Amino acid sequence: MSETMTAAAPDLFAKFDEIIQIRENLLASGVEDPFSLVMEKVLSPTRAICNGRDTILLGTYNYMGMTFDPDVIAAGKDALDQFGSGTTGSRVLNGTYQGHREVEDALREFYAMDHAMVFSTGYQANLGIISTIAGKGDYIVLDIDSHASIWDGCAMGKAEVVPFKHNDIEAMEKRLKRIPEGAGILVVLEGVYSMLGDVAPLKEMVAVAKKYGAMVLVDEAHSMGFIGEHGRGVAEDQGVLDQVDFVIGTFSKSVGTVGGFCVSNHPKFEIMRLVCRPYVFTASLPPSVVATAATSVRKLMHAGNKRAHLWENSRRLHGGLTELGFTLGTSEPQSAIVAVIMPDLQRGASMWEALLHEGLYVNLARPPATPANMTLLRCSLCAEHSSEEVETILGMFERAGKAVGII
Image (cartoon, rainbow, N blue to C red; front, side, top):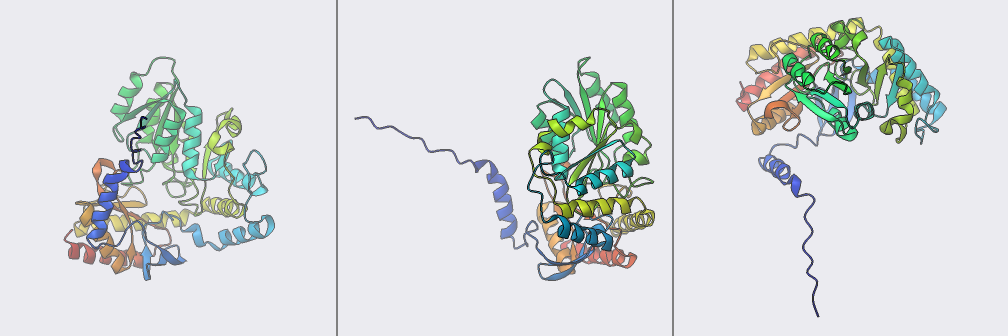
């Protein structure tokens, strides 16, 4: 009688062992877990009780401070009363309520474009639009530092992916030159890159893309509401918005809620509602969310004073940290993100903890999310931070930096 030998099944979690070990080593050093912070109570766009401490928030992406705007909150409460807590359906079935149409109308007006399509998250907006537009046999030329949702959209669509060095116009053109004649090409760029807060040279890049017959998609998640005369982003600021085929954005930054969108002037764009799988096969946003988003987007059309104050905050924080001796991700302020480069993960985590004990929350970002294997503290300023709060923040950085030995 023969016995059947059964080999032990491989551990499907083995691929994560290195990350597990890094996390265990970090926690074993006694540092608070920087990825498990709990906000017990949110007091305003700039303050919360975090892990039991009254804390200034400098890592929330709430750029325009709309999360506590009275009109925005009132719109959400009213929608809850009128339409209930959720749609329980896809946009192409029972998931389109009056509020979904209203927020798409607001986006068309905000961007002065013909079409707007709202997704349940910003991640899904990139995933859906990119994977649907560029498929097998097409080419996607993209910046190497593109967001994970962009890379995942490329993978889902099975297009040929051609990355180029970050913000390098010459490298981008070299890639475009090599693409076979007659192939479909989508160039994907970001207005502001979320890790370092640096801005893309969109004016030059869009010109190069059009020279080779490519369509252009720009992700303005971290610039919408803040950059540009009307807050339409870097493409507006650099005068090329009318040459961009698709603008992707999110409601989870300047708009102050959750959701994603794409706006476009392409005459065939509406067919996306029937062929884009991440749009068709997911439940639509709750009525309260689209009501808050529509109200916020319309208020951002007239937020010039808030944009000006946010720029003041960005310049002061960037200049103050530079004077203190910190190494920053950009030589000058380019957005509402100020990245403070750390020597390594251990000291970055120690600095993060020291700031938290001072009463300041920032994001600790590490590889593989960061470029060039950097560890950094990412500061996201808000239009609701007062000038006095920015000075307080600088004092916190000085004390924590000296205590940890960063400066």
